Length: 183
Image (tube, helix red, strand yellow):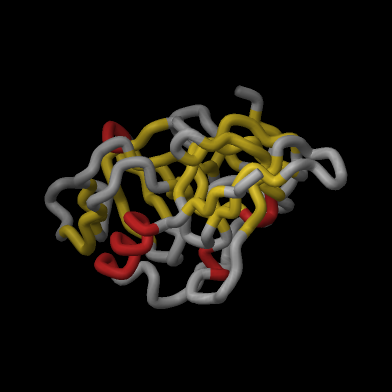
């Protein structure tokens, strides 16, 4: 059976154009610190995704603050690290942080495959199950963006276009190590 290779082409172009592809993001909360609850009643930090294809990142929590960046791709995972009224301070895969209105964020979970391996000659296996020696469904390039369906603490079930399979959880930016996500 021929394996398919899933690429992060569009995401790669976006990350390079946005300046996000210049340095790998290794920093991701390890989930070991005590989790706080924000004014929304939800935990902080937590991962969400961008709802809109045009999201202004501001230097402060309000429209009176300057725009420091504009995201141009819906679905990118970001981490909420602070809340103020209806504004959320987020951090992206590159470690850049700023404020966005909560209306521009979605609870849909997405993840970027091993962005720290971008620009290396490697792929990440997408497998049919978490069993040892599971059939490889596809090879996913670092930087590819996918939808997170569920995670069991060690593996995440993800969808990339028409391909669905399991990827080791520690190879995904957009979920915490050990985090359980039920579909």
